[in-house]
Image 1: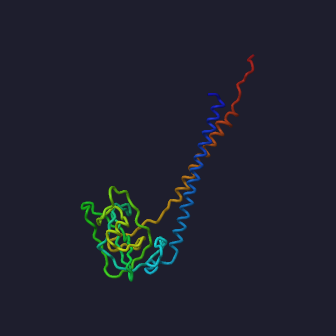
Image 2: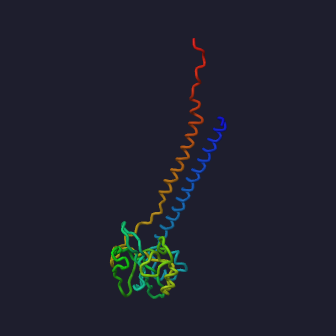
Image 3: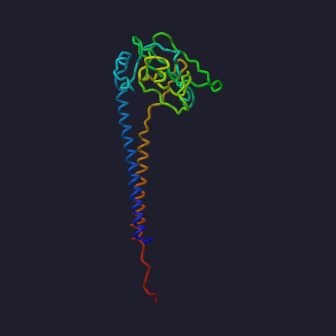
Length: 245
């Protein structure tokens, strides 16, 4: 391969590498912009007025209330409590406790993620003991989508302890008129439950960091090409061709 062909291949490879890395950097910036817009939407929701029972029941689409603070009144349906397994809080494994709340002056029911309890690793099939007040209670929290799902082999379980909560399956199982949103209860520990929920972090800074890395690689490719293919060859001095005395 002659020098011109080798230079052409090096030039094409450099341009392709720069094109790919710049594209990846721009994609990371786009992801950061999307997450910033989502964060702004979440912040806007949380600044709205507190959702009460009447507003939740009358909402045409309850999912539009997600991330708003709420104060709901109703009665616990303790016998329908679900314990989501393998959920962490403060780096410890346990259960998220979910109990339906029948809203006051309404037939509607909303699932409340009440908090976290540690599991008993010696008796894995034993549900933890928690307190569930009777009568009408007032529960504060923020509106949320159904809990995230973990990987699960086979069909969704229907027992009190389960890996995930499939809302459609749970609705059919309990025959409860469930709303499509959930309330994540907030506040200090009580009733045997911890509520130290982590702050929502969309990882915007991570995307900016990745973008900087990709743009840095593109710049490095350009500098290496400039040095080895253009500048360095010009610094070479031709050998002294004068005849010796």
